[in-house]
Length: 245
Image 1 (cartoon, rainbow, N blue to C red):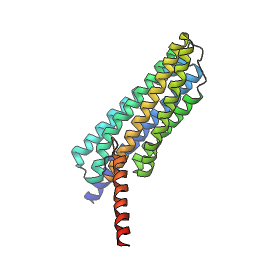
Image 2 (image 1 turned 30 degrees about the vertical axis):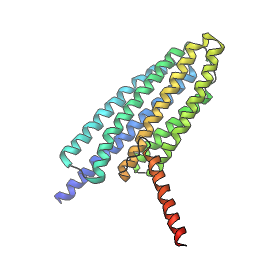
Image 3 (image 1 turned 135 degrees about the vertical axis):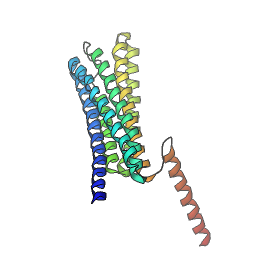
Image 4 (image 1 turned 90 degrees about the horizontal axis):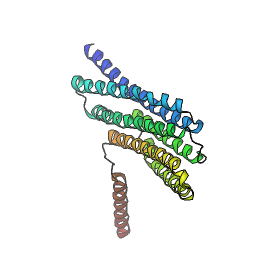
């Protein structure tokens, strides 16, 4: 009975960490969406309110850190539980930085609020939607130990990078056409860069999922190397089969 009670307490502690991560990720998603609404509406008040929400993200980071360290000290988790806790400690750092980047977006929105819009924000909003989707799916993959979804997030990072490059070229054209466009164009470019960095953090989270579930580190091109190695192995097997035939 005592062992069963302890196991239930341990499961509850792990579940609270998972729930905390989802809440923290949800706050970041809300900040991203609110910051883009503020941009489209030219709403400096909404941008300022969104910046204040970063305090909640910071508080959640500290709470989750404390919960994870308490589990490590009291429960001494092993195997998959240990990987989950250590990855959770890293994940909150990425989420906290995403929150900071949302604050940076809002700061640029405040600067643009008094200006006439330089251009339609269609592509920037599409980039924001793609980035928010990556954050959401990366968190779902982490909590659900879903490697396939994690790989999907990693693959989608290229699309966000493509949005950024396209926006940068467009904004450069605006700046070359009229020096008066430089102030607004550089602020929009900064927002696009912040979104691109949020997507990078979401990719980091997705890579953590693969390590947590499979024990394989695919950072810094590891996934490409792993795929190339598998292709080479298949080629050797095919060659051996051809020789036998």
